[in-house]
Image 1 (cartoon, rainbow, N blue to C red):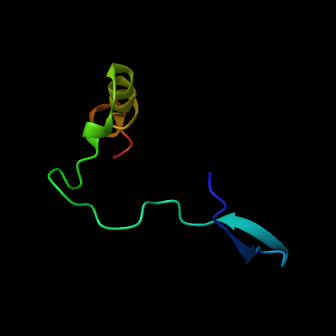
Image 2 (image 1 turned 60 degrees about the horizontal axis):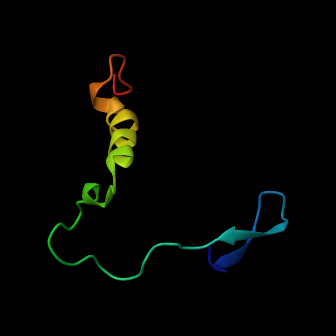
Length: 65
């Protein structure tokens, strides 16, 4: 992690350190913009994604109802 902290005031008026932006600067370029699934590196990552993210659409008792 980086030292990208900001000083903020919480609801009680105390000063706290809050983690700032952690994304990479710039705009995405190249083929596959917006396609993040290709970043899944191995079979375990793909299976984890399928079990968690897509249960919303394909689960028996879906969360979308």
